[in-house]
Amino acid sequence: AVPPADRAVGALVGLACGDALGRPVEFRSSDAVAREHGRVTEMLARGTHGQPAGTVTDDTDLTLCLARSLVEHGGLDADDVAARFADWLAGDPFDVGLLTAEAIRGYGRTTTPAESARAAWEARPEGQNAGNGSLMRCVPPALAYDDRDRLADRTAAASALTHADPRCVESCVALTRIVRDLLNGDEADDALGAALALARERGAPTGVREALAVATEREARRANDGFVLATLETALA
Image (cartoon, rainbow, N blue to C red; front, side, top):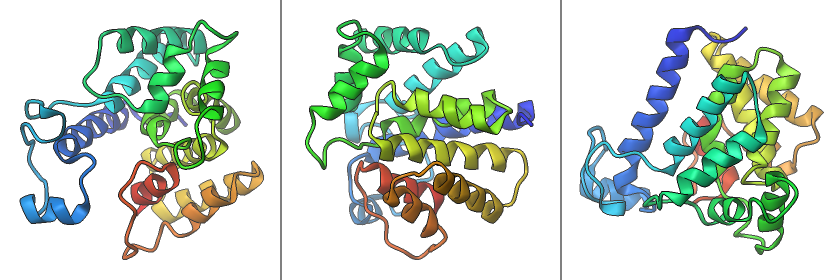
């Protein structure tokens, strides 16, 4: 079932709050953050990007672009989402991922936005081609689709608008399924197990399946970088 309205609102507000909490310390190591702030529990001003306290980043901005499009079109309209992304980038945001920007700037040069994103991905070397940008946008599809097959399909298509790497696409499919199941009241272990089964069924890259399998290792030290698989593990820890 589609999650209840109050949980849907809570998921989106929680995403924005987490983004705003993390923005001042983005790109800093966990040790550096601990030395300066201990545990970040309040909105901080300045820091990374030099913005006022409570300022969100491209993660929330693009999530809301996707959410609004899903609502207004009753589902994923890739061209409309791409147009919203392009309008947002034209506003000169203070923060945008490199791969995201390259994909969006290519819209209109190829047949479809997804082809632009694929071209941007193929042009980047290994190590710079599987960022976590589309993983940030998993909440809206989780709220929009009831059918599980359609949820996976549309989530994959949404990721492919900026991040075409199979590791990105399948990480998004897995995380979106987990978010949807948790919002519907499933136990965390059950939601994680269902996502792992789905990843195996879809033939997801080995790295995605491994990230899901180790996600319950709470004491594992997570890599603090923008790699999608490291971020997936961290999100599920």
